[in-house]
Image (cartoon, rainbow, N blue to C red):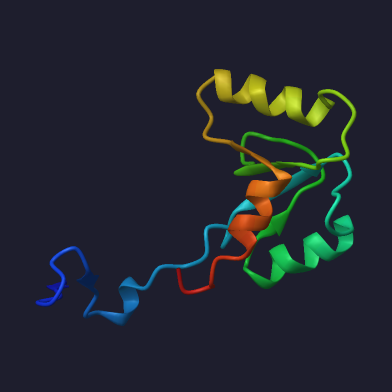
Length: 109
């Protein structure tokens, strides 16, 4: 790693194998509730394009649960994610707006 001489806060990675990947890359993702900004099929295509893996149900291996804005109350998937989190599993629950923001990150992040 090299420090940028003009800006000491910027770190340059000299080894290309140290490149960052997208936060959804190689992560297991579950949708719950209808999305207001796109269909679930469109969202799935975007996640797959970033290297994410879709799941139909929340499991111990789930990384992200995406909460659609058009949901009614707390879904079974949301409850399962909360239960697994309380047991120490690392599952991130993302509201739809945060999901859209993460989608907008470049692949090489």
